[in-house]
Length: 449
Image (cartoon, rainbow, N blue to C red; front, side):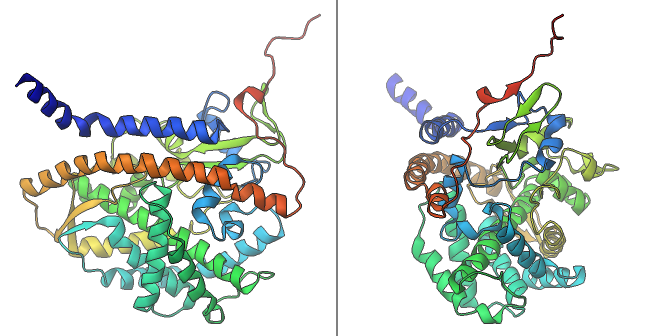
């Protein structure tokens, strides 16, 4: 009897300790496979008050070449990672691709708002939803119209959603990659190259132009906007009192607590002097930790509190949700917040959102939520059901992430897509990646007599 009771206690406690243990094991496996690479910022060598200085340094401009971490990102984004704006090295191709992207995203504010509102008005959620799944078709339609200047047909929307969902699901270790979904979208886009509203990057083959569209707008843009809007609605659902706060403050606080980027890595092209005693050598892999930076300098940093932004400018805080203008900022830094405000305002005008599920930065549960007519309140039993189900799902999901995530990290390391790309292109060998132990620390002691 006591054995049975002990077994029941052990099983019942799984949701409280097992997910954290699995995350720790996943990180250990990641380090064992991928190696310890990079200088954490903020960290022992670069304090939080130097974060912006180092981030904005012109030498912190390399993106892929010479970093083992790049193989992992290229693996998840391929095919076409070598054309993705975020992963291109500085140079003519990066400049041409960036110009093309800006042309597509430079829509007037009124047009962005109207388009976002139209897409949101077509969303009719069921009572129980996963917010990321709810948002992805919306943003597929939005960015299709940004690119093609016409309403998105259902078959194209389905292709875009299948591709974007496959990318983000694999990225979180919740599923393996399905290349057929990606190839179908590429093939479709190849047939539509003549229909885009702006010229595509020059010097690319038709297939490369299709991969550019796919990577920029129908991978990154759709995934990031889906994640962003899911996080905002999830924050409102978990904190009903915040629904009376300024929407701008809610969005700022959501991005502070749940930044879309975890760690952005950059490879230095020259030495960077942090201060009078610390120099980061050329070839260093700098790992900029957005969550750590966004929590530094705030009271109760783990609390969701939109009111903290009253009378405070996000520009003057440790808050860079779209990066920094001096170093490869998100190309949608202007369009994205306009569209997000319009979408969230339209959805919350018609519906109320409620959830007791966990909200973490990566949102692997896709945001379980109860959607009711505006002003309606959920039952306590319905909210309890969401909480209990989410805790138990996290047990199984964690095991799936452990197995699949470990496999994909190993497979990416084995394939070395980024490393092989630069080797095949005839580039000279990059400087070896730098670890903390390689950084120059000048003595503070005065010189001898």
